[in-house]
Length: 470
Ligand code: AMP
Ligand code: ZN
Image (cartoon, rainbow, N blue to C red; front, top):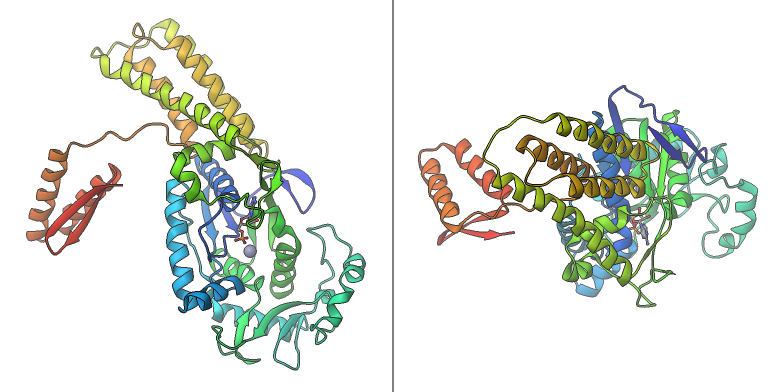
């Protein structure tokens, strides 16, 4: 498997630190609003890459943070007259709903910045001790950028060019810095802001330190893959490297993956220009599987343009796969006999296996989902040509399994859940109540899970158990 590594600007063979295991960190959103479709791009593409690696047999430890302390969150909290945790908790919950609707798997761990302050204090203290950071007169702690000799290696920037470009910063209220390149690790609180005690001042962390700390805590000093949108390369990821490598004395991440931006009508997405959509806006018009399909129809390193026409094209593309699976299911349901595969069917299935090989080749080539989806389309065409009522059940089942498996790796749900009848649901709920009475909680939980699997959510209320389709 090859990955394009931003660090070396090359496609490299993927070799994990520990055989069979992948440690992956993906920078998550700042939670002050509903996520927009730009935020959804890294979520979907890196979730797909994770699913592919899992399909290949890797055990993937996938960590993705929520930045829950930040100027924008604080501003919104002040506007609403609530604590900033009310804002962050609200939007974390909303973000998780969007992720679920887009079929993005929950991370192994979703750490929150505000719950990792202790680790940040430790790492900042360590950096000060090692001479990589210093405390200014007002208690701000800065990272001493020039002390990290490899600064600029990810963004391929030259320190002296940066120095020239940023000189004005020194005369705009940041004159306590030794050098304009230095960046904040910890800053003093302002009135009305959330703050934590520290040896340097009551305050809060700079943005970059959280990812270095969370990655170290949940994945260790060295990780395999670090990912996020391309806007994060500089300064966020460059600064993460400086902090982590200066503190831990080891290479931080081996492979750096960055998705290109999502634009709208060929323009940069921006709230002020009004060309801005939340995932929720899209959900009003489309099944979010269509959004997922749309994102995957381009390579993650190519800019992707969002437009009504392209979404309509994505809709029909996605539906082509769904219809193919529905047709196969229809053929299967009509079959009663259990005849084995004919010689002709055996040959056709061997031919069909080539789609799996080609799908894997595309995904092995730096997660080329665009090509992988084209292969699924070719498979669909093959199925539509070769599967009909004259074929055996085993043949149709094998083709269906193949289409569903490849779609699954892309996280595309192509098989509609079978609707349960109200009566079946009521019976299961009655059985669950009886199990609870007998203190058989294992069975009661099992029934809740069976129902959830079928899209039925239970709510225990004072008037008894209520259910709804979700
Ligand atoms: P933020 O909340 O701004 O830190 O963004 C969370 C993630 O979304 C980061 O990985 C960003 O790089 C990514 N992101 C933000 N806007 C876009 C966009 N328009 N296209 C693609 N990725 C984006
Ligand atoms: Zn980060």
